[in-house]
Every structure is written in C-alpha cells, then in structure tokens.
Image 1 (spheres, helix red, strand yellow):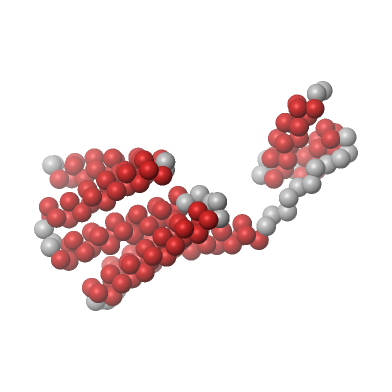
Image 2: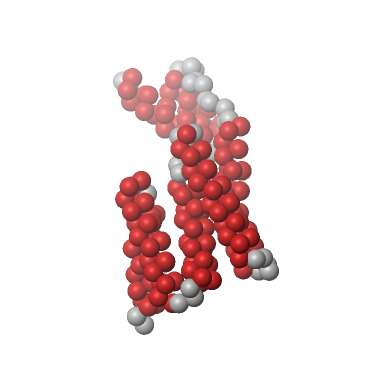
Length: 174
C-alpha cells in the first residue's frame, strides 16, 4: 500500500479514536497495523477546551438570566437597560475573545443578537409602545441579522434574518 493511502487511513483511525467512534482497543490495533507499530502521538486534550466549554455554557446562561431579570423582577427601567447593555457587552467581548482564539464566533454572536433583540424591543415598548414602532425595531433587528450573516458568512444569521422578517410580516398583516 502506498504511503499516501496509509497516511489517510491513519488519519481516519485517529479521528475515530479521538471522537470515540470505535473502542480504543480497536483503534490502537488498527493504528499498530497500519503504522507498523509506530503509532502517531495523539494530542492530549487541553485544559483550554474545557474552559471554552464552560465559557460557552456561561454565555448560553445569559439568555434565561436576562429574561428572568427583565420579565420576572420589579427592576426599574434604567436598571433593566443597564443589565442588557452589560450582558451585550459581555457577549461582544466573547466575540472578540473567540475570534482571537480562532474559535467559531457563532455562539456569542447568536446570544448577542438575541439579547439586543430583547433589549431593543423592551426599549421600544417602554418608550413609544406603539405597535408600528415595535414592528420597525424588530424589522431593523432582522435586517441587521441578515447583513451580519452576509458579512461574516454565518448561515444562521443569513437564514434567521429573512425568516424573522417573514414572520413579522405574517403577524403584521394577518
């Protein structure tokens, strides 16, 4: 068997082992078989990946936390907006951090977009409380999502923007 084919097979087997698609004993046997006993070094899992999982989970917890703080407590309007700004700032900081760490920025972007949607809808409702104003703010959010998806090549934003506009149109003209 030529060297390139062996290399591809070894890469596949290490992928299976890393993602636990086969038991470790089978992968070790296959690696020993195809490498002639010279098993390539498998990179140990770093502590950074555990930190990223914790950080991502913390970001996801901002959504229910913000909904609880805003809708189920008797906070003043200024304090509610301060919480939204603080949480959105944390999310935008996470976007910057994820981009510097060469990680996918999709999760912090989605959390940021949802927080900004909730915050802007709350501000529009409290300040103007006219349905047309609230619809305009929601449409503006959907347009921002669409342009963000096009600019950053994020499929979830490319899809959610037009879908949000479609849902908004159905609600407005029913």
